[in-house]
Amino acid sequence: MMRAFSVAIMMAAIATVAYAKSAAIEQRQDAMDAIADASKVPGGMLKGEVPFDLAKVQASLTTYQKQLAKMKDLWPDDSKVGDTRALPAVWEKRAEFLGLVDKFLDDSKAASAAIKDEASLKSEWPKLMLNCVGCHREYRRPGCFSQCWEIGQLSSCRTRRKPPLRPRG
Image (cartoon, rainbow, N blue to C red):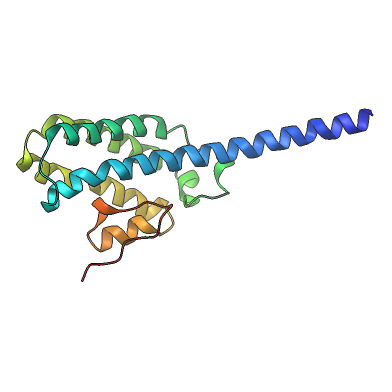
């Protein structure tokens, strides 16, 4: 009886650790998805596919800020493996990586203050998107984001859970 109880306790502990690992991965993937989704409307505005709407741009930037503020806590050492595209460099160069998260957060706040009209969106938004590219090139396995960036369709990127877009033509 005691042995069965001990085995049950051990299995519960293992399940808890496994859940914690997958929870951190899932939370950061959800945060990245939210950021990608928030990029779609402003990206469409840049291309002229969506009419400029300052309130929607600011809502996107608010989403960025909310997600980026919690992003730094979503990279525990025990979340290196699993269903993740994060490269080992995230943990090997943790300070540099977290500094890029801080920079992206600061840049999104600056963009919130700077974007007032369509002209300022067109000058500021591409600078903000460079944060994504800079981080993903070094800290993320290739995937949809990289492909969408290369073909100029980042604003329509469907994120990691769906297939990448193909060039129009």
